[in-house]
Image 1 (cartoon, protein in one colour):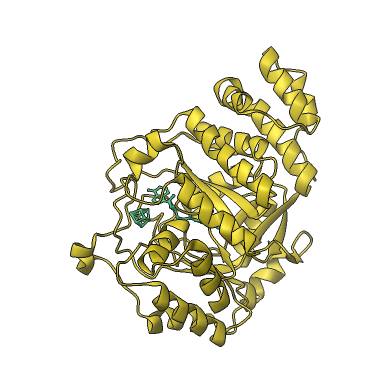
Image 2 (cartoon, protein in one colour):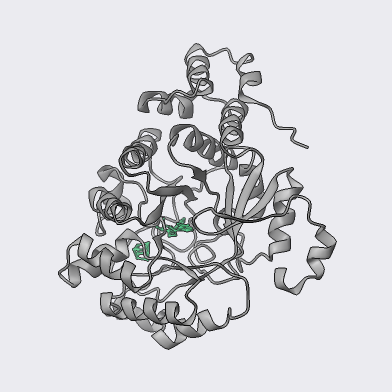
Amino acid sequence: MNTMTKGSDILLKTTDKDIQRIGEKINAGERISPEEGILLFEKGSLPFLGALANGVRERLHGNKTYFNRNFHIEPTNVCVFTCNFCSYSRVYSHRDEGWELSQQQMLDIVRSYDGKPVTEVHIVGGVHPKMNLEFFIEVLQKIKTHRPDLHIKGFTAVELDYMFRKAKLSIEEGMKRLHAAGLDSMPGGGAEIFHPDVRKVICADKVDADGWLAIHETAHRLGMHTNATMLYGHIETYAHRIDHMNRLRELQDRTKGFNTFIPLKFRNKDNDMSHVPESTVVEDMKLYAVARLYMDNFPHLKAYWPMLGRQNAQLTLAFGVNDLDGTIDDTTKIYSMAGSEEQTPSLSTTQLVSLIRQVGREPVERDTLYNEIRNYKDVDLDQMAQDPSLN
Ligand code: V47
Ligand code: SF4
């Protein structure tokens, strides 16, 4: 049963004229301006924003909540860059404190999923000065030879920018070579906050906004889909968030190549920004809601449960989110090292399905491109728990 409040019901109870007008615009299917986006952050109450965002989410996806079966490969945490929010990377001179996987070790990880119904491998890591384009082309080819049907979502624009510059290739040439080797799509990492006033404080030395956007635009032009993230809840203002989302919305108007927007909550353990307090759950939910309202041309909004924790991820499903990412199988360290509650992030299919059903939503397994694989709305949870392929 769906007990969520529709946006139009809550509008009657809003006394702020500006906010009421913005709500009416959204309910009429009109786009909101950057100024209106900032006003929503400043003056929109949590229940009001939640109801509006939920209305948009249900217009787009009904009660469906997507997840996938996936695992990560993190080739290395050695990194030439020094983002202040990063708890995960080690500089090259301290590489003995980190890890560097060989091609064989990466392939062994893929082989360990033989016979298991995963559909996606997500490859992301630090920017290692010696792991170059040729190295990753071989990795992609080996994975595809071993398991052609496995979708490879790999490499942030930060990793690609470094690889292409080192190989002295244009973005287009570099992307074409990776695509031909087996790269199917790109994750959304490395975006952080685009505005230079923030970027110069939190991640001064890596690719800037225009470089990040140019790589995604090229991928879209070559027919690949990508995601986009935003690292929020540190030193950025509401205006910086809207500026970030606006740049993405403008690119999406031109290419339609983004699948999913993924806000990532800043976690402050063991990094150079540990003095910055983390955002509250109220701020988190407001951010998801405003993202759903502002990013009107993004089909999907994802809450990445290893970062938020599973209970808060459940809560986001009432604030515009329609996707929870995947089973993960304890194959990523980025968030546990930054202090997430999820120290060994892993959910069986049964657990993910239960998580979604507990809050009255309809779990749908998808592939990376959001083709539906199976709807678990009416599946018997006890029977599922007995099925080894789902646990
Ligand atoms: O760009 C690093 C973030 C990102 C911290 O596309 C941190 O499906 C919070 O982009 N606190 C990489 N966040 C991961 C990423 C991603 C994750 C899941 C799904 C997808 C997708 C993409 O992790 C980085 C950075 O924004 N990050 N450190 C931290 N302390
Ligand atoms: Fe390197 Fe990525 Fe960490 Fe920045 S966030 S230091 S690019 S691993």
